[in-house]
Length: 146
Image (spheres, rainbow, N blue to C red):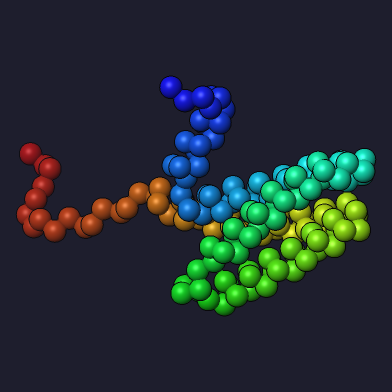
């Protein structure tokens, strides 16, 4: 029997069964959530707690960067890599200046990217669920009339 709590087991099963594009959206959700969770401790001057959340967000962005596929749509991968680099620089700036506005700015940019990925994922999912049209009846002389 697993020592994980039921919620953690549910989340793990959700991740393991998710399509790749949905996983990307989930990663964005996590990065955004962690950045926003870093703001209250930042305002309160709790450096240790702030850094915990910042580090989690940075780890996700680094993972997104490391998993870019340059063999397909390489221009998109290069652009995303540059975007992630700028966002990471802004996180460092926001953290060192202890500026919640910069951290929120990064969260907003990540949310915009998340929405784009979600749209793509939803479009692909919709294509998969649309019924395939039946081919025209090629049987000659077939009739349902009695």
